[in-house]
Image (tube, rainbow, N blue to C red; front, side):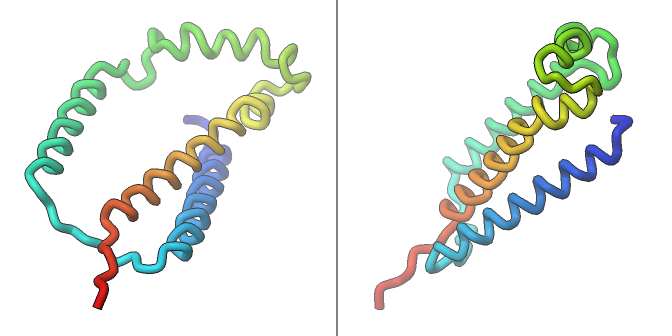
Length: 129
């Protein structure tokens, strides 16, 4: 949370790549009109998903808690093993360049896939006249 330069870089790269991937995929879809019709099964599953997500959000540790799993397992591993694993003496640089590079790319792919799936689900079929 104390690295705004990292956050801005990750947000801009992620948002930029997601936007480019989404527009490229939409250009391959011939008719991408959005169909906003709702049915009871869809609304039921959305309500169920909202309840499940709310339950799991309540289970998260408090913000900034020293007993959060990341402070007990992940951070000590990075402090002890980063230079040995990557050969980079700066821990922040090593984490961003070596460990988080795949994570950021994975996040971009997930956002792209979600946007593409939503577009295809809501896509209206072209009427044959």
